[in-house]
Structures are given as structure tokens and as C-alpha cells.
Image (cartoon, rainbow, N blue to C red; front, side, top):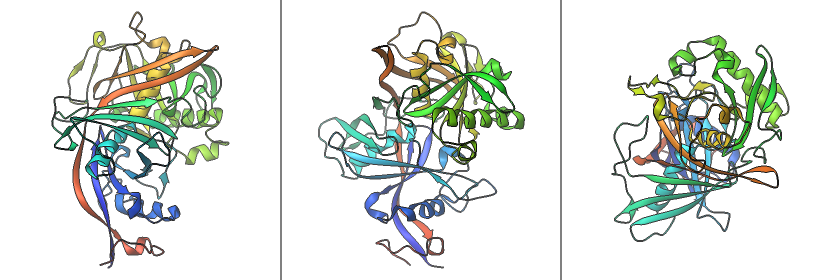
Length: 394
């Protein structure tokens, strides 16, 4: 059987992996992208393993990134993120991936898309999904993005060179408004769950947050526990669907049920002792709040980075459910320590009031990244019969 050979790089960014393409190596007709990405990643796979592709069977390992020249004067590259569903033949472009954002600057430098010199690089990234600008700052090693370093991030074994990500003006990435309903907290009518007090916030990606206690949870539940509780999964899905309509992400519950990427849904609680996935202890004294997040219907084993940034922004908004569980007395400009399944994640957010309205100025955190494989992804020609472009058929 003939196969298409498409140049690609497999990269880790934070706690995610993705296949990264140059826009120049993909067809100009973006209607053909979905089938290419599905075939490359190995979806749809009813077994949930993606053995016939480059995916890893979970949402954080089922991703594609496309990099090309910038279409904006305030950026160096354009970056488009694609979330490939595991069991469904569907690709979602409605959200960004914060973890993979950390690999985009290094990719651009290593591929010669951005000229750099000295010991450090700044790459200005335009994320086309959210139309937001991200600044990536990282060390260089002989003109390439540094890999070795001392930064350890929860959920990734070993250490690496830090990449500082600064999300500039992250508010309204999905809906155009930091607070899509105009309120820091709302009462959400949720079928099967009744009336729940939630905060719907849109910074880097749209999210809906609810107190763990209001779901009858401790807040320290592990991903496997969440995944093994069909009633809880149903409730969380219902909250996401109701919030999607309330935030204006979608117009109907039926549309929201199909668009699973955003809003992210998470439950939060105050600082408390917990265990990590490796069995290590997280001390309540060492965190400012505790959180769990859902990503594309699956419990995240760490925290999605854009959702974490949104959570940090929400934590700085008085009256939000996240602010209400946040440790009192901390530095309002300091980093927020979030206890999650893989450990403790630190994120900073600058949020101010302007003319009586909340405004998110920026959010920042550190990640590590690494180029894992470079070469060509093979895609069955039979999956994309309409495809005629530069990659060689063999």
C-alpha cells in the first residue's frame, strides 16, 4: 500500500507530546488537514491506544502543532494547535495547548525559522487558535535550544532546560471576554446536578471552576478514581456543556456536547495534604490551593497549562470560587502553588481592575521541552485520497 511521507518532528512540551509540522509541508487547503492528522496520530481508535499512529492513547499525547511564518508584526511565528480525539474521527482547533507552546520557540530556532544569537533567545509566538501572543524565553547551546538543565516539572521524569512562557493579555482567548457572563461567580443550572455555584473565566482558554465539596468530593481524587466513577464523569460533562452555552462558546447543548476541547472543567479546594501519582506526599502547607482538571473528557494527570493559567487568573479575581479557596495572606503578585495529581505546579498571574472591570495583564510559568524524533511521518495514501502535494508517495 502506498504511503505519504511528510516531514515532521515529535516533540515533548511540558507534560504533552505532539507531532510538529511545518505549514509549508501541508496542503494549502486546510480541509485536508484533519484526515492527515487523524492518520498520523492513529485515530479513531476504538481500543483507545492509537497503536497505528504516533499518539499515546490519552489527550495529552494526541496532539499536532503546525508552525509557519508569522501573519502579525508583533510575532515571529504562527502556531496552530490541533487536539486529535482518540476514539473519534475528530480534530479540534478551538483551544491552545500551553504545554506544547513551550516547544514552539525551540522548534522555530532549531529549524532556522527565527534567527538568534548569544546565550538566550526570545521567540514571539502568535497562537492562531486564540489569536494571542506568547513570549518564549530559553537558553541556547551552540545556537540551538538548550535541552539539559536543572528544572524538574511535575509529571515529567528527570530535569531539563527551562523555557519561560509569558502569555500576554490572555483574557478573552475563546470568547473575547475575561468574564464571559460579566460575573466572577454564577449559579449554573446543570441537568442532573441542579444549581451549582461556578466561576466561568476565559484566560488563555475558557474554563469553568466548581468547588470540589459541591460535587461531594474531597478534591484530592486521583485520575483513575475519577475515570472509574461514571456518575462523576457525567456530572462534569454536564457542567462543561451548561457552561459552554452560558459562556457563549456554543449556542446549544447539542453543539457543546460535540465540542469537547473548551471550556475545560475543573474542581478546586483549599490547601490540603494529598498523594501524587508516584505516591509522594504533597503537604497542604506547601500549596495555595488544590485542583483537578478534565481535558477532552479525561481527567488530566497533571494540569493543562492554559487551564492552570486561567485558574491563576481566577484566583486573583475577588468573588470567584477559586479565589474563595485560595490560601489567605499570600503575596498578591507572587506565584500561586497549585497541588495536583503529579505534584505542585507554580504559576504567576497579574490581574488588575480597570474602570471597575477585571483585566488579566499576563500569566507566566516555566516548562521544559525536548525534540524526541525527527524525520518523516508515514500516512496511508488511502486515508487522504484527495491529497496531491509535495510529500513523496512510495
